[in-house]
Amino acid sequence: MGLLDGKIGLVVGVANERSYAYHIAKSIVAHGGRCAFTHLPGEKNERRTRRAVEDIGVANPWLVPLDAGSDADIDAAFDRYAESFDRMDYLVHSIAFAEREWLAPGKFTSTPRAAYLQAIDISAYTLLAMARRAHPIMARSGGGSIMGMSYYGGEKVVPGYNVMGVAKAALESTARYLAWELGPDKIRVNIISGGYLRTLASSAVGGAEAIMEANVQKAPLRRNVEGEEVGRTAVYLASDLASGVSGETIYVDCGVNIVGL
Image (cartoon, rainbow, N blue to C red; front, side, top):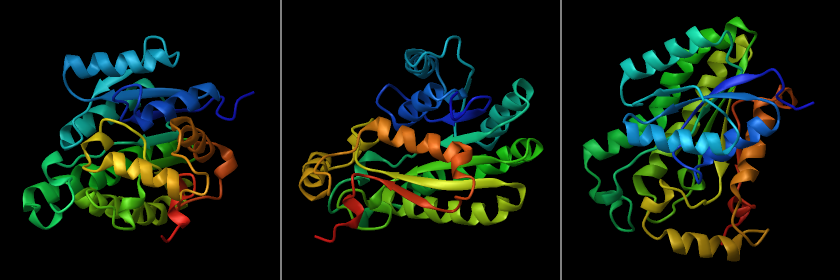
């Protein structure tokens, strides 16, 4: 038996085979869970997401387009999910965005208002927006688990992470407030703070190679995290093993966050 046998949920953020959402979905499926997926609008993005999820063994995947910056798109995606499935045991929010131009050491002070607000909108507000739509679906079946993805740059300064760090701080705080309000309906909300992983999103951060090298030197485990390690943590949070865990930020970064220097 798998930890997630009989459970089903929505995974938002599978861009390709390197994304954290991919590793999370792969682990969920390996432990008996089922996943529905969203993809960025456009045929090219759909093909890329379809190829990734088929790679983990999901034949004929349930896929809908989602522009997370559009409330109408979020409504449509969750409405279609509710029409297709009678429950949502977990929701994985694994999306973030900030303009590459402002993700470089020395560029934070120059960040324009529009870029700042867009980063918070896509990276943090969308967790709230999706949780609001997931709430009634989860409540009908007795609760569920919502999880988002963060990084240590939301707590401490990582040069070059800049406005994305601000957005991740907002994401983590948003999760705590959601945990408080949704808790009475047995809905748990948690954040996984994963270590640096080479993805489409992380490649946009200036100084990424230096971050990876520093992690190997500083981390207690003397290495960077593997995607499947974050995936297994997501399985735990989605399962009944984590029934008493809510409002937490769980670090899966080989211990980098405990090191001061």
